[in-house]
Length: 155
Image (cartoon, rainbow, N blue to C red; front, side, top):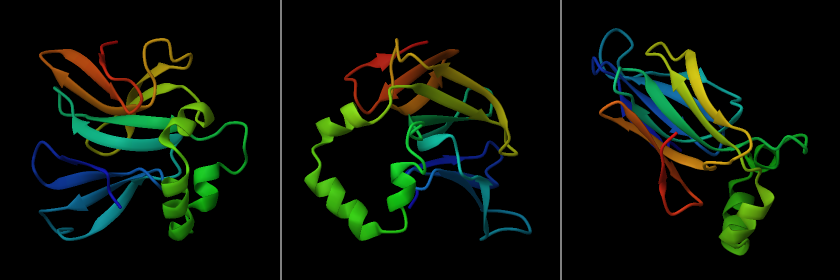
């Protein structure tokens, strides 16, 4: 189920971020592929939350958390095939526990219109922020939103 969505500059396709399974899809709106979808990025380094177009036509993807580095396979990957388990855990585990369980790491991916990775912003120590839920640009400045912090960060 998509969580983030962004329209291409030429309005030919949408990019969709699917947080729970860590992938980005392209849904074609115009042209010979209209009405079809394709995987742009799969098995990502983390879980994409939202996706927005940057000031210069690329796409910015906030990564809420990287996949667990100490657990193999990552916990969310293990339960991904079991929607009932995910719903149950979401109801019984307090949100505050996730702050303790999930690694703190700030990551933003920048994708070209072809879906290839063209850049990233990273804060592995989470000194500025972590759990990036949204990233947007305005007048040449980049702003980061977080699921855990009640503020906007500016790298």
